[in-house]
Image (cartoon, rainbow, N blue to C red):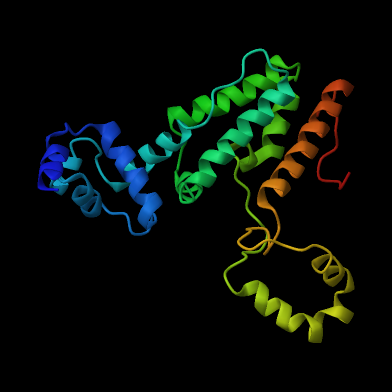
Length: 236
C-alpha cells in the first residue's frame, strides 16, 4: 500500500489529471463535499500544488464540466439532421446522467467555455446543413433550451418522501377538487427515483418530448416557416 501511495505521488500532476480526479471525486462524495483540500488529499499532494493548474475552485468546476462534455459522442458522419441531432443530444444526456452533479455546475456558469460552445456549434450546424434557415434555427434553439444538453428542469421537485406524502393526502383532498390531476396521477405505475415523479421513466419522458420537438421542427422546415411577419405576444 505504501509503495502504491509513493507511485501515485510520483505521477506528474497535470491539469487534465487534476480535473479528472475532481470529476471522479465529485461522483463519489458529491459536489457539495468537493473542496481543493479534499482533492489534494485524493491526489496525494499539498493543496498549493493544485493552484499551479487551476486558479481557484470556480475554475476547477468549469474544467470539470469540460471533462464531462468530452464524454459526449462526436457527431455521426453522413447522418440525416434529425437522427444526428437526436443521437448527439441523447449522448449528452448520458454524460450528464452519469455525473449527476454536472448539470447543476453547468447551469451555474456565467458564460460557456470553448468546449461547450463547440458542442452548441455542432448542434446548430446540424440544423443549418439540414436545410433550416438561420431564422428557424434561432427559434429551434430557444425551443430546445437546456434540452439541447440533455438536461430538463421539472415543474416540481420530487424530493424523497414527497410522493408518499402526496399519496396520503390525496384521498382526502384531491379526488373532488382536482379530478383530472388525480385521474392522471393514478393512471400510471411509476418507478422509484424518477425526477419527473416517483415511477416516471425519466429517459422515456425525455425522448418522448425530444421527438415531439424534432418532428415539429421538421414540419416547420418543410413549410418554409419564417418568423418575419408573425405577430408576437398575442397568444397565437
